Length: 150
Image (cartoon, rainbow, N blue to C red; front, top):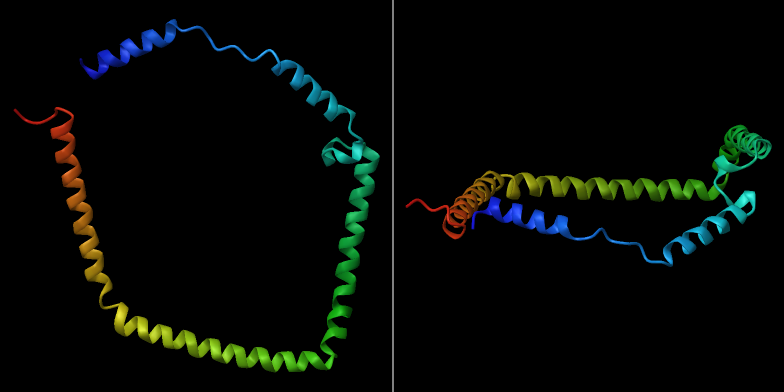
């Protein structure tokens, strides 16, 4: 049988089937969920459904928190830098940064000397393997699905 004929046959048979019906308990469950959602207090709902007054009040409070943080941040930073343990932490961070720089330099040298020369050959091999898979897949498609030359 031709694939197009098979498709038409299946389509015709599927169209003869009746439309699926929802379970009888679906509508009561949906209505119960909707009434539960409507019965919740306003502050447990999405912010855009709050009363306008509460939305404005919460926006003003948020802007106050942001402005207060922006005004206090320089003073907090100044107070933190005067602490003595910060100087110790700076020294530890500097030594860690030097160690990290040494490690990355060693990795970069190893990459350039060992891995980088091999990459073009590996890329070529992978490309050849992909091409071989494509040729094999095409040949298999022709043989298995009846598209072989006669």
